[in-house]
Image (cartoon, rainbow, N blue to C red; front, top):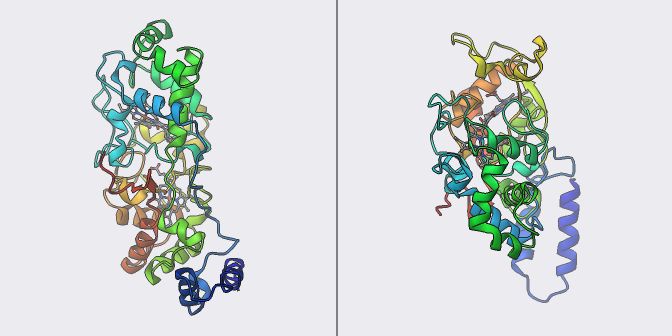
Amino acid sequence: MSAARVLGIATVAAVGLACTPTPTELEQERRSRLPDSAFATSEDPIEPIPTRTGADPRKVALGRALFSDPILSGNGSTSCASCHVLSEAGIVAGEARSTHPRDDTGPYNVPTVFNVAFNARFNWTGRFATLEDHLRALLLNPEVMDAGTWEELLPRVRRKYERRFVEAGYPSVSEATLIDAIVTFQRSLVTPNARFDRHLRSEEVLSEEELEGYEAFKSVGCISCHQGINVGGNVFQRFGVMEDAFEGRTVGRRDMGRFLLTGRPSDVHVFRVPSLRNVAVTAPYFHDGSARTLEDAITRMAAVQLGYVLPGPQVARIAAFLRTLTGEYEGVSVGESRR
Ligand code: HEC
Ligand code: HEC
């Protein structure tokens, strides 16, 4: 019997002091008729996202305004939100690869900004170890924000935002406070209460298909790369462990992975394993946006990473499980939010 289930029974005993059965008791009673496999265990390799971030709301609000403000960009027309649309799950819905202001063949699929706080490294190659370093680089990067120099950028921000920075508790607009405000906002972009997390907290019972999908996700070995609080985001792995992931396609610079950073042959096609949080609503997939649907991505992963040809129903079960990883931002499902 699982630890969570023992805990559930202890809760029933505690609320059992009341005279009439409460909704919790009825739910507990219903659960007591379910098999053990329907419950989360303390050994689950995935942890739920905490429901609170503890971030200073004034800084979050300021960071949010900056995130959507094109004054950060050199040409005054691009904001972070141009490519990371919060109402489209933190990406541009349906876009395979990003369009950059200067280079319309933009190289990578845009990763979501939701739950970046839980990634150990940033970008497909994991080039940056902190969100601060990542942001500093991308503000000045001519292919992304092209903000010019700090001496050009800071006065622009100061003119519009000096008062708001002070009201948010910062001494003034500076490189450090600008970075802090935007990063604080990015860290607040967490999506708790996914049905799977509610299952882990024993607040919800998943369907049989979803639970079987989770079992398959573990038993075929997806979990060995996609695990932890973000169901990924914390290790590097080659794209194509068992089979060539690029077979039949021209391999370009974009496909070289960490080799671009290290020059080591062993890093060719090595990428940061992406988080699978909210994955059902962030199609298309892979660093090049080459998998159109979740089912495509699952089928290809099984083949190239694990050497399995997964039958259709197994793919469907895993997809059903992955759909339970869609969380909520400010109380609205990331898949449905429109703001
Ligand atoms: C022109 C489109 C575009 C704009 C504008 C843009 N991004 Fe991105 N963003 C991308 C792409 C593409 C990547 C992946 C780049 C890579 O892997 O090399 C990315 C990666 C990221 C990541 C890393 C996510 C992860 O898990 O690795 C974060 C965080 C992020 N962007 C935040 C921002 C912020 C903050 C801004 C504004 C200052 C911004 N982006 C502006 C396209 C854009
Ligand atoms: C050996 C490590 C490894 C294993 C095992 C693995 N993956 Fe992946 N997964 C990766 C890597 C690396 C990527 C990024 C590929 C790329 O560069 O585009 C990825 C990408 C994905 C994506 C696309 C995410 C996105 O946002 O684009 C999905 C979905 C996915 N994996 C699901 C699975 C499933 C389901 C399984 C089991 C059948 C699995 N993975 C097994 C390493 C792994």
